[in-house]
Length: 133
Image (cartoon, rainbow, N blue to C red):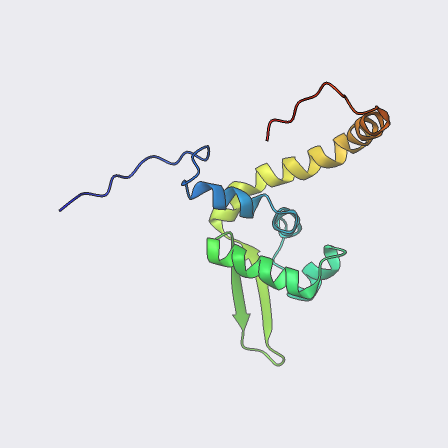
């Protein structure tokens, strides 16, 4: 009988499951949902209003994936009408400083990045550049 060899996580490896984690936590709606939930639990409609432009379907998918990964907790209150709230889990709180920093960096770097985009787009194509496909 052969033993399964478990390697330490290494996201540079094609087969490493940590790549899927990076993909999920790096998604725009995951980052923004986490930042929206940093202060207090929120209901679905409140989150949707906070995240302008997110569709109901996308927010539902994002919240389900975050709950599945243990980043948020969903609480159902037996009231009339039923009330559901979403809150960051302890695991989600460990990721929060990183996503807050990422959001802040994106906002702070926006003008510089837009200037680089304009400069890049004005340049003629480099004819000597070889594709590394």
